[in-house]
Figure 1 (cartoon, rainbow, N blue to C red):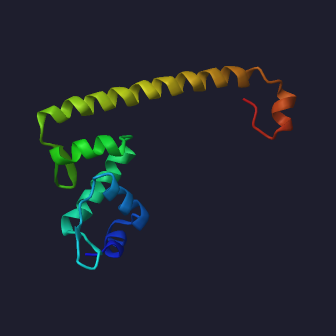
Figure 2 (figure 1 turned 90 degrees about the horizontal axis):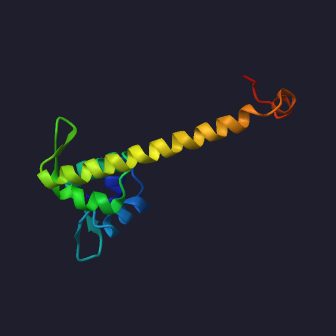
Length: 128
């Protein structure tokens, strides 16, 4: 299938599909005319890429992980033991980011709590 068909099947723009190819995430065949020819399995691969991006992984990490992933019943399956080390590392990185964001939010809440009620009303925000 050509890139337009893959776009329709996955909902991912052609620009992003070309980017995924540049990053080594997709390897379409090239026709003599230069057109990309994607396989049926590329539909599932693009959906996996989207899931992994939504999980906070970079395209570089995804490129390393894709060869060790399969799917069953619509779920990603980690087929390589060494993959788990990377996944745990990524989960720990995300957990640290969440902790840092919670600390930042608490700091903002502390500053916001010091605002006099008339200042809060002046900007049209609800006062708690």
